[in-house]
Image (cartoon, rainbow, N blue to C red; front, side, top):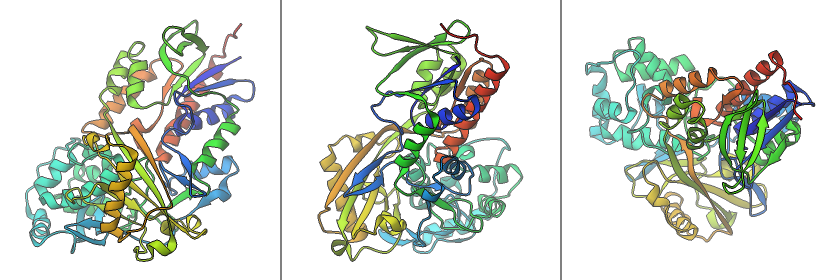
Length: 487
């Protein structure tokens, strides 16, 4: 019998297991090994005042094919739902205004409308940027924050780019790499754009972006503008991502083992041997192939003994921690709340939250029971100390910020805190090269693949894409070289 071990029971691992089942058929044994006591990874659906509510990722870019295709395969196409027409705001300079139009991931283009967000001095700096000589080395990479500060001054970074990208990566633009986080901007610069303003305009034109569109499709629940074509842009799963997780488990027919730590990985007799369980009493599991769908720190630990170059590359990918605070209110108690989809918060605002999603306004199905549900994201890369308080204190801080942002004074009828320790990989300077080195090293090792958010995108579609590709490579290799069998 062919056996494939999938290490990691998040969306990447489960998507890989499902694809393996489809390709290898019912006779193969697919084993999913998950350290936690539940599946889903940074996707989690909870009961919030009687309604399923996502406290990890809540949405996905529907224009990417991976998730809609997966929902169709699983018979969940009818569970796909779209957001309402409510728009988002940004809190900057002590004011809440509409999300600026005409930027590429916070980088102003020629037609950017930044009034109300930037001061007169900030607006003047943006206007002067196109005339400032630009020194750019094609193919290079730099920290996005430093580049934007040099070209536009600090306000564009603190009030626009940092809230947008900080919501995606739970990071700061000063540590995020340009090439991995805003590839369209890098491509325009490589092609000879004379300024960042011109590069942003070129990038928006190439992708057909409509300014001001938001999604909260990342594990931390951050919001980010995305390329837009005609029709719906973003989607969510009615009933929460938990429905997708459950369907993947059923359809994969995998042997699922939660609460199981994979402590080691080494080459076995014609395949791989995994060391499981507690160190004093280890269990050995043999497999013909292994898919590692785990965060970068775990990938480094497992890869270093068998593929040192891959382990070293994974060790260069940092991670950030964050938390999502979910709250439910009686509608009558929050009547003054603005009818927007949510608010991003500039990095220099004296608030704890980095963003708030008015979930019941954004998703119609979450407000049909007379309750209003919100979620707030807290924590950025390098600011882990801000999360080292108990849940009650986090809720209190969020409620204090909601008084400022939404005028909410009432007590919630329900609250829940979900912490994501090290849950988001940071795409730093040179990230594409790091991932290239990791994947190149693994590609030379038979029966071993990697997948997940540390590679080519932190959103759910990107995770599904890497998982399916890994499963397809494993299946193709096993078909070429069938398993010799197992006693």
